[in-house]
Length: 257
Image 1 (tube, rainbow, N blue to C red):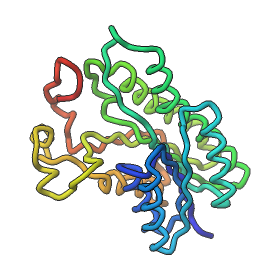
Image 2 (cartoon, rainbow, N blue to C red; image 1 turned 45 degrees about the vertical axis):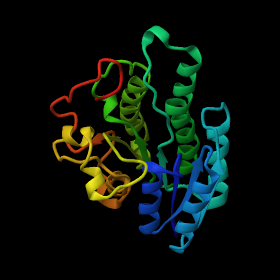
Image 3 (cartoon, rainbow, N blue to C red; image 1 turned 90 degrees about the horizontal axis):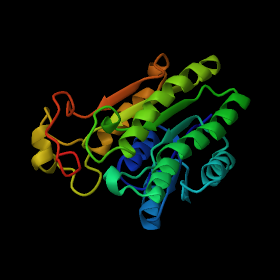
C-alpha cells in the first residue's frame, strides 16, 4: 500500500523541501498553502511528474475549525495519513512594550493550536486504522536560545518541543512516534547555490560557515519518518550548522544578529 504524508504550509521553503523529498521516497503528498496558489500548483505539478499523487488546499490554519476540516479532507483524498508534518507558521519579532493582543492570538493559533488540532484528527485516524504513524513538528532553535523581542514566537516553539514529549508518551502504546525538528538559519527563498549559502553576515556566524537549505531539513525529516528511526520518539533535534552552540551576537533592537 502506498505511503502518504500530509504537510502543512508546503508551497514554499522548508515545507516544500520536505514534500519534494518524501515524494521522491515514494510518498503520496497532501499539503496546505496560505496565499500563493501558483506556488502550490507548481509543487503539485512537480510531484505528479514523479508519478505520485498530490493534493493541495488553501487553508488559514489560524482559523478556529480549519485544521480539523483540512485534515479530514486529506484523509478522504489520500485514503489515509501515515505521516503528519506540521510546518505552517509565521515568525514575528516584537517588543513586549508594544505587543498587541491580535498578534498574540494569531501566532498562538497558527504556530501552536493548529498543530494540536491537526494532530488530534490525524492521530484518531491512525489509531482507528492501526497505522504506526509518524508525527513531526517543525520547531526552531529559537525555542532553545532566547532573543530579545521574541517572547511569543520563541516561547511557542519551546512549547512545541515540550509538547512532543507528552505526546510521545501518550501515543507510544500505538507505535506512533512524535518528534520535533528545530532548524536554525535556513535559506527558504531565492538562491540556494553554495556561493549564496556561504555569503553574508549570518553565514559567518555559523560554525559550518553556511546557511542551511530546505533539503537539509528534509533529509532529517525523511530519516525520522523512516523505519530506521522507529525507536526515536519525544526528541527535538536541532539542525543549524552549530549556530547556537557558542551564542552568536544578538541585535539589541530585536532579531537574531
